Length: 584
Image (cartoon, rainbow, N blue to C red; front, side, top):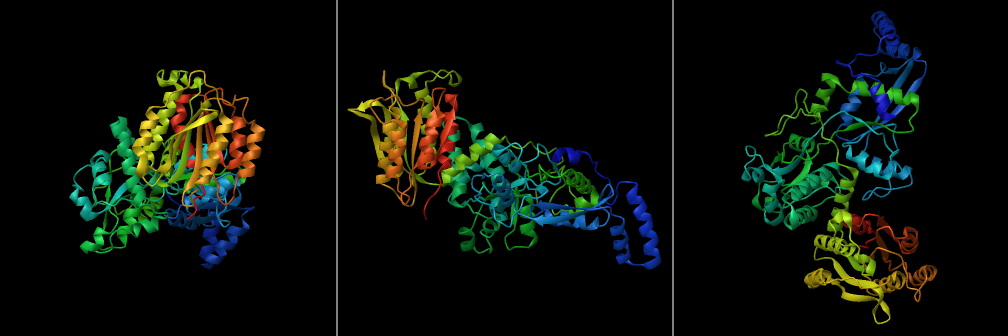
């Protein structure tokens, strides 16, 4: 609905132009009345009298663009109409993360990293978040949660913000820097202290990290993965929940000691740098336009699904006002560019800022965003995990989409990728399972749960030696109960305690527990004071998702399945990212 209503109104070339007809009659009458009385009150009175009805439109806008939108609406007060109906627009300054949480909550769901929305945050008729990436993330929950298209009404590039002295040492503003240039400094230079606003809550942080990951992928191979993980960890050390908190950690004094303890680099918007420098801090920030450039923030004008026809038409009239030189000048006053990257009068461009007049880049695919956020959660949320890998004979089947590698091989590769993301604050262990793998037991412990600082190499070696059991069956249910009890026995209150089971089939151990017996036993041994999450990763067409879901619904956790075993790596990341409930 939002896209159709928006396109039904062309943008005026000059502020103040309105639809002909009823409004021109109003203008003529107002002109006569104002000449006769000189009264603005009379103008308002006449305007109200000539309104057939009033349409009240709620519009939530990201805090940085809200002043420009609010002033534009104020200038049009009394003139904004939809047919013979007057339109009143309430412009609400709202953090995009809060509105996104409210939209997800409205549909009985949530977005990772956001939690429950404040009761004060309502779903508006029109939403102008700072980035279309919010719409992409919400579409992952439901295609009908947000409009299928939304027109941009402003833009701000995402830059790497650094104190000018630190940037100068890198060749700024004359040298064009790449992420590849910056990787060694971000990862290993002890003088560089990186930070980021939590990318689950901040579009600029998310955009910056996506660009960083793309640059790491371009390096390729294990070197590229190690570089990416190292850079993510470096930013994670200095992460903040709020942009204001992050900005407050940049140096506030030219004193050497102060600078040494302050933040050195963070992905932020150009607008944030302009706003920060407008306060004339002792140490201004430089904006580094790093290549490849992160996706800029594009401020989409989104008419929310379910909005009435009248309000949708009124929203189109509002969109038509967000154009022209006067509006662009208001954007410039708050440090924002026009939707095409051009700037209005008085725009305080940072040194070295390029001219940006190209079309706004297409937002990343929702799947790519989700993968990055899953990776981020894994990097930043240490846990205590027991990985349990199926070695039944069916795991020897080749995977056509993985170049002929077996299910076992793609599963081990996924575990190795996950292990590379875990830093030494993690604790992890490794079991394998089939049937009668260790005497009468269907499972065998290869490495006990212990800090990775003590046994990372032992885990890597054990994963490298995992082999499928010829003619081995699937003892899933007995193994699940034993793994749950093992993790529960060593429960750590400072970590998310979890069991991650990776299997390609259903239980076929006729001498072991049934599904009903397993669920009953899990309920019996569960201790709310010591929660253990079971996360099931099902691979291939033989998995019975409903059976796995019964298990994970009982313990807490989640079930992830794919018919294509080559996708198990992404599933493993999602599974790890699901972990919640760390006690502090």
